[in-house]
Length: 351
Image (cartoon, rainbow, N blue to C red; front, side, top):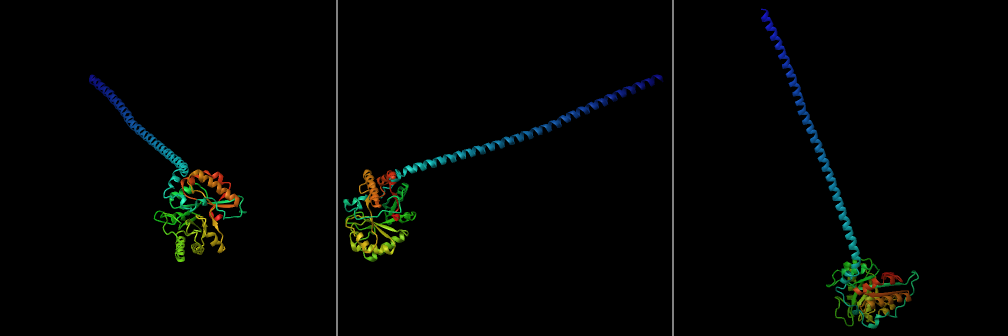
C-alpha cells in the first residue's frame, strides 16, 4: 500500500511539472506570437508611413517641378517679349532710316518729271510779281512748302516720314490714282492740285479744265472736288499754262472757287498768268509760288533751290516753294532740316 501511494505522489509531481512546462511554453508562444504580430503590424504601419512620406515628397517634388516649369515658361515668355520688343524697336529704327531710303524710293512710282509743270524754264526763278510784308506775329520769316502731285499711299508715307510741316496737294482721283480723296481724308492739312489745260502736255489728267469750258462745267467740277475733299480750303493748278493765261477762264474758276469758300494758289506755270489781274479786280489777295524746287531733279540743284526759298522768305517776310514727291526732292528736304530752322516752316493756311 505504501509503495502505491509513493508512485501516485510521483505521478502527480510529474504531472505538475509537465503542466508548468506546458504553461511556460504557452506563455512563451504567446509572447512570441505577440512579438511577431506586433512586429508585423508595426512594419505595415511603418511601411504605410514611409509610403505616405514618399508620396508627399513626390508631390512636393512635382510641385517644385511645376513651379520651376512655370518660372521657366515665364522667363521664356519674358525673353520672348523682350526679344519682340527689341525687334520692334529695331524695326522702328530701320523704318526711320527706310523712310529716307526705301520709302522715298517707292514714292517714285507713278511719278512724272516736275518739268511738266513749267511752260518756261525762266519761271524756275522766283517771280518778282509777288511782294509780301514781313509777318510781325512771328520772330522768323515763314516758308510754306507745297508738295504737288500727291496720289499714292507710298508718297504720303514718304512725305510724312520727314516729319516736316509740308502741305500735300493731292491730285483728284483717277484710274491711275483712285484713292487720293481717301488718303487726304486722314490729313489735317492738305490742298487739291487741280488739273488745268496746258499749252502742250501729253500726259493730261482726266477731267482737266479747259479754256472752252462753260461756267456751269467749271462750277460743277469745283463742286465735285468739294464733295471728294470736304475740308479743302486751297487749290493750286496742275500744269495750266494755257488755262491760267486766259482771263475769261480764270474769272469763271475764281467765281466757282469763291462760291465753295476755296482759295486759289497760283503755281505760276506761265509768265502770262492772269490770276493776279483777276483777283485784283475782285478785290482778293493774290497768292503764288515763289520758288520751284525741282524743275531739275538732281539733288544738288534742289538743295540750292531750298536755300533760295529760305532767302526769299527772309527778304520778303514769307515765301511759297513748290516741289514734288520725288526721291531726290524729299531727300534734299531731309538733308536741309537744320538749314530750314532759319525760317518758320508752316502749312499754307498759316501763311
